[in-house]
Length: 270
Ligand SMILES: O=c1ccn([C@@H]2O[C@H](COP(=O)(O)O)[C@@H](O)[C@H]2O)c(=O)[nH]1
Image (tube, rainbow, N blue to C red; front, side, top):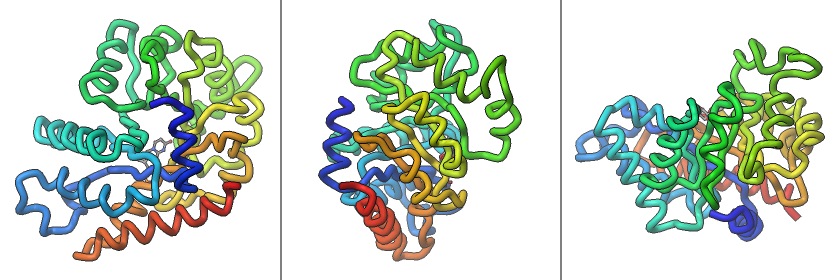
């Protein structure tokens, strides 16, 4: 998907919500467990309930890999369902990959060509030659982990490296990569106080912001410091939406949560 099409959808729907499909058989309503593919059927129900209120979906690949071949099939059916029925939705494979160049190329082929995701999350640790293979794909987007939402992010990311913190080094060095206009960055909503400094380095890049809802990040703070003229934000909520209820009203509860976030987002869009 072209970035301008994503921005068009955000303005049209007055939403920069990304729904995280972190589907766990221990958490979905029991009635799904009798079906042949409970993960896909649950995802389908969540997509139908929430698609009006969001512009992106982010399956976290770990939740599918955990079920082996069956999980991969559920993932494939989910991305195909989205691409066939809601091609206007931006899709993110939250896979956190990255390896030496020829291996990164295979990851890129797997997620961009075989599964046809619009984007993938990548760990920047192995540097330029591990990231650039993903950036070769036209109209695909590579989302680098910059400052993550978890407590352990302080172990390395906020430690100073030569003259600046490691997460700032990730932002400034990656800007020099070939096809850097295809980069986006992950910044946790729990790290909203860093957004002002982040925007000084990447004033226009899209940021994928997980950590509102279950992790306690503030949407208001994220918008205050992270929003650009082009919006520049995709804010993710996974558990807060998909597990809003574990009862038979799960789809309505997910829709209500997504709508609530969309309505809050609309107040920040002009
Ligand atoms: O810094 C990061 C990077 C990725 N994530 C992922 O986003 C979702 C968040 O789920 P919630 O249930 O809304 O907390 C999940 O898939 C994480 O692996 C993140 O949280 N922080």
